[in-house]
Image 1: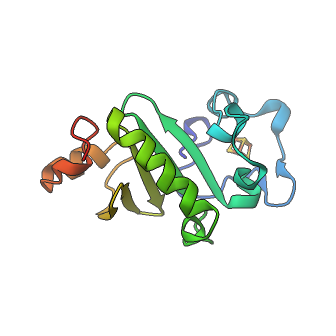
Image 2: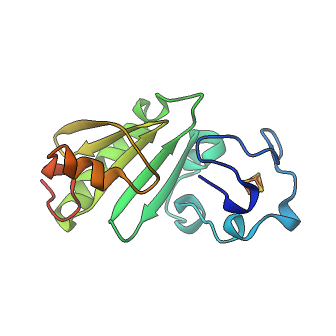
Length: 149
Ligand code: SF4
């Protein structure tokens, strides 16, 4: 994600991130970092296999859009297709769809909507918040949160 205080764009590594030890400025990290909690940190029911360092994925519940956004490590873009992850993601997709929710895979610049009966590649996203707008422009009614399939 983008960290405005550090001028760090999304899809780039933070200069303060040690890939083995984590944040090297944890005590003085910016407000954006302090306010961020991924779903693994807030959902005790998620198994240890969903810990981001293990899964290579970060789960974030986008409440306004009712999306479960799955950010994939750029070095392991196929991580979400491995088991037990794919089964979990499909189960969440089936659970969320009747309530207007979506599981959205953010795989680098690509966005994939995981549907109850397959997946839909929405192509490259244009902005951090541009997925819904992009889907509407493409006429992909099926991926709008207000129109679940
Ligand atoms: S928590 Fe630390 S390593 Fe992570 S983005 Fe913030 S400053 Fe960088």
